[in-house]
Length: 157
Image (tube, rainbow, N blue to C red; front, side, top):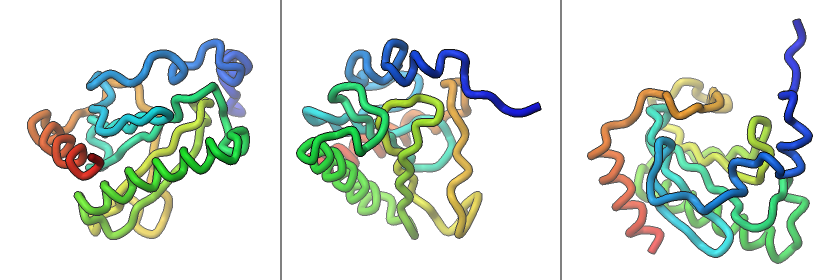
């Protein structure tokens, strides 16, 4: 059987049922801890035990799906914020490589997955095997995650 796009895909694309268009990211929730916020983005350090330092940078302007839907000014602002968060992650975690994945195949709203890549890695030399999350994934130790968030917030000013 061929996989299908979700039945509510048109509504997701239109933003009528977009879970990222709602309120700004809370300080913390089942998905993670907000480590940075600007006028147009939230950066959320993920609590799921997928990869240490895995962070989502979410566009918080109007609903857009693709980066090319942004004005030149918005695009510059978005990518500079993504780079700022990536730089802080690299300084804090000291990975071998940083990955930036702008997907939107599950939630069609502009956001970028920042994934530090380490010597011990599930897919060295290939894209990170990232699967959609539902909030029920195994979590990092809360004390360690909070410590990371505190250190990252300091770097992000």
